[in-house]
Length: 403
Image (cartoon, rainbow, N blue to C red; front, side, top):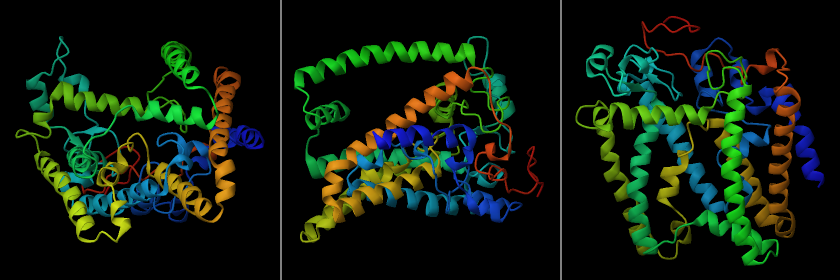
């Protein structure tokens, strides 16, 4: 209860008074005019070097609570994130792979070859199909470095998952989330039948509440999801919906063949299917050759490659802060303070989640619906406005210095 009250009371700061607490990107503060520093240091629109969040929403909003994840899984995710964010992405960007420097290093947007926002409406005909003449006129669609690399890793992760399960498990049961609820019920001493009925009823109620809430928000929030019209620091930018929309354009409107197939310029990404299939085999061979090295068995290539599956809409600060909390809970507390961990870890995690959720609803009902907001410098996300600027010579974008 103490943790719940503290979480409830504290969220008024990152949730309303001081949104900068969501991502503390100190490198941008030290070098306020450097595009490179902003690209490296921004936790929301860059690589997140040194950034961290003082907001539980930064930790659990996309990846869930790190306090319920075993340390080996957290470590796999941390290694996968670090390799992707601090090795693969910088190399691809600064080598200008796929004209990377013409676009933001971290973005879920769709772009033309000269770094401008892609006008999707211009390539749709009256039947909502792609107009090939208009598409050829506007040119092929480009992705930011992060967006393109994430798709490549997802290709590898798909192949790695199939091979990993075949080699290490042979078979796998589904409905893991369903079983997690039963595990929680066992922890709380709830009878299985009552737990099952709660799941069924909860699913029905959730579906109706989600639909009603969506309509309610669309009717009450002006410019919902429109990033160009919403004020800085607005929580209503709908990052997940933007990513879903972009994916529908790529896989539905234009089609994967014109992006990742023989007609697209990202066709080389398909080789990552092969790389993803080979990687678990190498781990399996190492495990058989060195059976006494138990840490090899803990390497999960699907988890490692799929570490960034929530990135876009999730950002770097969500991962860096999640890993730090996961290390404190899953490694330090579990190893050195086992009694405390056994009694308080999961309860504390639930209390932090619940406190944040109740305050978020309270803030919206009391302030959001009345359009009461604060307009000051602490609302400027992480203070890294240059992180989304291109670095290619001759590319002109509003708000960015010309190079």
